[in-house]
Amino acid sequence: MNIREFEDNVRNGLAPVSSTEQLSAKIDQQLWAAKRQRTVRRRFGYSFAATAAATVGMIVIPTVMAQAHLRRLAGALDNVSSVILTTESVSADGTRKQIAESAYLDGKWRLKSPGSDVSYFSNGNRYRLDRASGHFIAENGLDGPFGHNSDHLSMSDVLGDIKRWRPQTHVTFDSVELGAKSVTRATIEVDGENSREILYADKSTDLPIKLVTQAKRIGNWATLEEANFDYETKQRPEDFVPDLKTYPPIAKRDWDAANVAKMTKDNLGTIKTSHGELIIRSMDVAKDGTVFVTCQAGERVPNWNRGYPIAIEDNLGTQYALAEIESRVDKEFIDHSKDGKLELCVFIPSEPLPIWKPRTITINAMMVNQNQLQRKEIAYWGGRHTNYCLSKRWYYDRDHPATAVKVMSRAFDAPTVDRDPSYLQFLNPWMFEAGDRFDREKAQARADYYRDVENTPAEIRWLNRTIELTHQIGSINIPQARLDEIREIKPH
Image 1 (cartoon, rainbow, N blue to C red):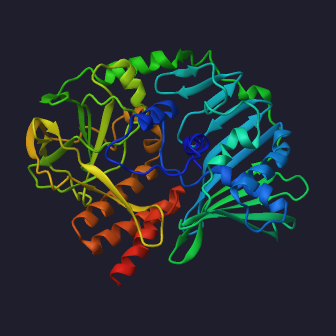
Image 2: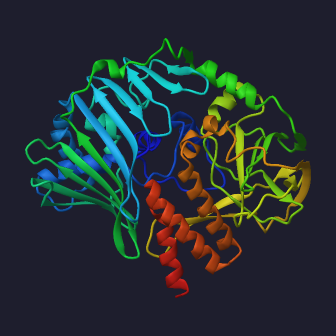
Image 3: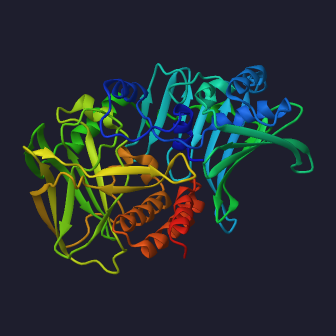
């Protein structure tokens, strides 16, 4: 799994957060403190607790008992001084692609993934290499490589709080052959979810050997990711030390302030709102017609997607789907800019454009009442047999008609970027460090658009494309659940 996914999974081993229009002050405080609360369906905590479950001969492990067994067996991993965790994605045709490597040696960590820069952690200091700027971004005073765990390798510290398990989590086990060796296999499933994890553990040491993530497709389980644990390869201490001579360190707070200043220096258009101003900071168009807009609207609650504050139109009549992509550095802008967090809005043509054509794009603010922004929200809902969302759908509240107020227009004779703007590596590196992840989001956005306009054949076409890309990047296969729902509602 991707290094940043690994970090999120470690930090956010939480039950899914429900969508709501208004956050209470308590929830806002929790979001601020945790920095990022996202729906996380794949949690490492499940997997290692499964080792505990498997070794005591229980078919289903209730939450309290799982915690107790985890504490009893945590010493197996606590005593490990060296391990390399290598993760591969597995495509539908069986093609494998390495997507992450996490190495640990005597309290030091090295985290990397293909196409992205490496991070190091030791003695409370974390250094993340940014080759574009030629610096290591430095943070100190941290408890662990992910900011919330301790620096030594242990089940509870590395894998999150097992107490947050939902009661509908089930663990079953059996013995199987793996590489001519009898091992324990633990299968971790959650009622109603379309994915599962399978952990293989050594019977004599209780140490994890392999972790497999699967999703159900057309009624069958398909492997999306496979992570292997290597305790034998000898690692060198010098490989866990950042090269601070070649890449001088810069404090993260200074790095943040410099990027915020760069991202907020331009004002392409402004409109007064009931809460201040909506300011357009940047606008780019890629070769495939995708439009990227950043803006500020005075929002000071981090890490909560309150919907797009703008809409766009062009003189070619292009219909745009909306991508569920937001900045991951909200607090940095809130701390360093009086205009609040920077909002990232990504508009994708509902169908790929065959050729580039010059166009004029207009940005509109949707206003209701007295210059109050009417945001285009995401609506979530579950299917009949699930307790989580099957897909998302963007909408304006049709009970409160809004007026489109022009903020700005710009003519584009040519694309401004090939694929996406470079600043997205700062705003959301997880999404844009590898092209296939963004391609999947485009496909999902198009499927959601066609669901909104009730074009089921087109929705199915893009759901299938989303699933195809899901296998390529190893993400949980939620779109398949939507296809199953469509078959129930309207057999094809």
